[in-house]
Length: 567
Image (cartoon, rainbow, N blue to C red; front, side, top):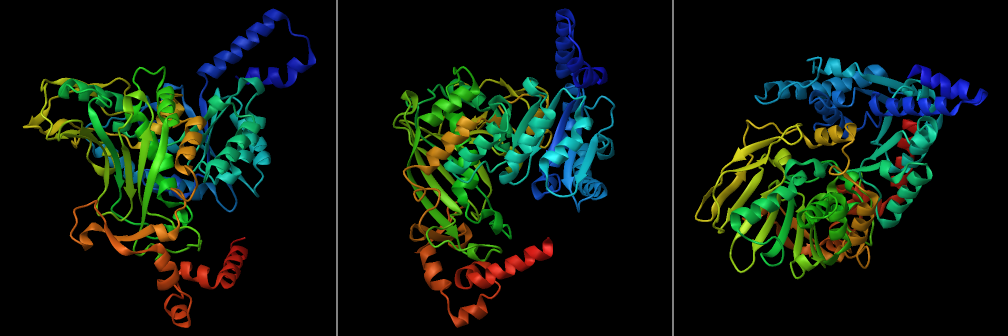
C-alpha cells in the first residue's frame, strides 16, 4: 500500500508505463481496495447523538465487539473535530459512555466477545481511534490535513452526525481529498433529518451529488431498519400464511395499523422538536419504512425495489393531530402563528396496489401517551382476529408475533431467525396459542442477546451490507412527497385551530395509548392562554414560547448576546 501511494503520486506522472505494468498496477490497486483496512471518519463525535446511551459511539463499539471490524480486515476510526475540543476530552467522554455498556454486555449470558484478539474492552477499542483537531471551520483544509493518515485504506466511510447545512462542504472535501478519482473510495452515511421538507431534501441531495458522491455511495441512516423485527419483516409474512392459513393481502387482511407511542414528552428537548412536529420526526423518517416493508412483495427483485413499489403507490387520505398539554412550556421554543408543532398524529394511507386495494393503512404515533409501544396490527378480513407484530424489542423489551381471537391452523414447531451478529443464525420456536389467543413467536427472553439498532447499523455499514439497513434517496424523496400531500398544512404543518390539546391516558381513566383529548385547540393556547398582557409578562417571564411571541425583539437581542459570548 505504501509503494502504491508513491507510484500514483510521484512515479506515474513522470514516465510512460507499459501496458503490462499498467495492468499490474490496476490489479494491485484493486487488491488494496478489496482487502485493505477500512476507515471510518466520524464527524460530530462529541454531539448528543454520538455520546448518548444507544447512540453512535455505543453502536460502533458494540459492532466492534461483535467482530465487524475483523470481517473487513480491520477498521481505523478517524475523528475530525475543531477547537476548543481536545483529544483528552473526547477520550474521557467516550470512555464514560462505553464503560457501562461494556459491563452490561459482559453480564449477558449469551453475549460473546468476537474480536480476534479476545480483548473487547473500551480501552482496546479506543486504540483504533485517531483524532484530528482543526482550528476554525474549513472542511477542505482539515480534510487535506487528514489525507496522509487515510492513504492506506481500501475504503473511507464518512459518517455525518453533524448539522445538514454542512453535509455538502464535508462531502466535497472528502471526495476531493480522499476519493481517488474514479475509484470512488469515499462512501457517505448521513444521519436524519435528511431535510425538513421535499425542497430542502432535494437541495441536500443535489449538494452531495455535486460534491462527487456517487448515488450508490450515499447511505441515509434510519436506525429503525436495524430493529430485529423490522429487519426480518418478510419472515413474519411467512408465519402468517403458514400458521393462520390466510392470504397476505386484501383477500385475508381487512386493515393494518402501525403504532409508535412514547410514555414521555419532550422533557426539556423541545428545541430539537420546534418547527419539526411528529410527522417529520417519526412518520417520514421511520414509520413509512415500516409500512413499506410490511406491504412489500417478497418476490420483488430486491428489498429496495419492493419498498419503492409500495411507496410509489401510497398517498395520504387524511391526518389528525394533537399537542400534549404543557408542550409550549418547553425551553427554547419559537412562535409560528400559522402552524402548530403536533406531538401526536394519526395518518390514514391508501396504497394503490392490486394486493392492497381497499385495505386502509393507519399510522398512529405520539408523545406523552402513557406507554411505550411499537406494534403493527393486522386485522382479519371476515373475522374478529388480530395478529400483532411487536417490532420494538430493543426499545420496549417486547418482541414477537401474537394473535387475538385468531385460531391457528398449524401449531407445529418452526425455524425462525435468531438475534445477534451472526448472519443466517436460526433458532427453534413453538407456538403458545390457546383458543386463538397467545404468541405464535415470542422473543421476549432475557437469555436472547439483541444488539442495539445502532450497533446493527454500524456493523452493516462497516461490512458493506447496505441494502437492508439504509434508505436510498429515491425512498426518502418519495416519503417526503407522501407526507407533503396536497399541501404542508395537511400533515406536516397543521394550522393551530386543527390541532387538539390532549393529556395522557391516566388523566381521564383511559387505557394507554388512548389519549384524553380536550375541548380546546393550540389556537386557543396561542390566543388565550399565552395572550400578551402585563400579567402574563410576569407569569411567563421564563417561558421561551411566550417571550418569542410577545417580546420577539428582546428575545432576539438576548440570543445574539449569548451567541457573542459563545463565540
